[in-house]
Length: 213
Image 1 (spheres, rainbow, N blue to C red):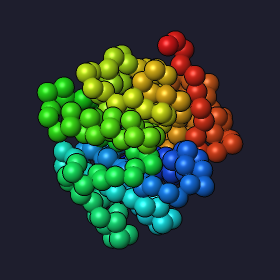
Image 2: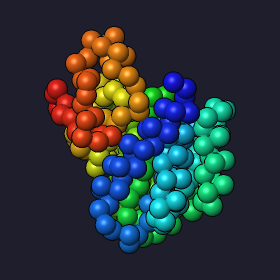
Image 3: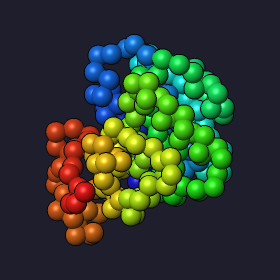
C-alpha cells in the first residue's frame, strides 16, 4: 500500500467526520488550513471531496512543502476548481468550521510567527462560533505528551489516522476519533493492538476515550 492510498483513505475518513459535524448545514464556509506534511496532504484530498460536493470552501496552505504527495494533492485540488491561498488574510468571515491540519506528527515550532498567527486566527474563528476539527493533533499541542504551547489550538474534535496519539486529551482535543486509512489487520496485530478486526465495521471512523485526562 502506497502513500497515495493512505492519504486518500485518510481524506475519506476526514470527510465523514466533517460532514457529520456539519449535519445538513450549508450556511457559512469551511476553512482548511493545510501544512507541509502527511496531514496537509490528507487535508488537500479532503478539500477536494468537499469542493466536489459543493461546500463553500477556503483552502490556505502554509509553510510550503517538499513532499511529493503533498504537492500532488494540492495540484489535484486546484484541478477540481478550488483556489488555494498562502495568505492567512484570505481566511475571511462567516466561518462555520475550520479543519486544522498544519502540523501534527512533526510537532510545532514554538518560535514561528506564521504558526502563531494561524493559531490566533483559529482562536478568533472559534470565539465567533466556528467549530474546529484537528487532523492528528491540534496545532501547538505536543502529540506525544499532550502539553500545549502558548496559544495552542483548542479543538472540538480530533481525528487521528489509523492509531491514536499518546498526547490526546479531551481538554485540548475535544471528542477523539480514529480514522480508517486501509491498514490491514495484521499491522495492528504486529503492534499488539486488539483493535482489529474490526473497529471500523460501522464506518470509517470510531470514537475513542483517553486512558487518562
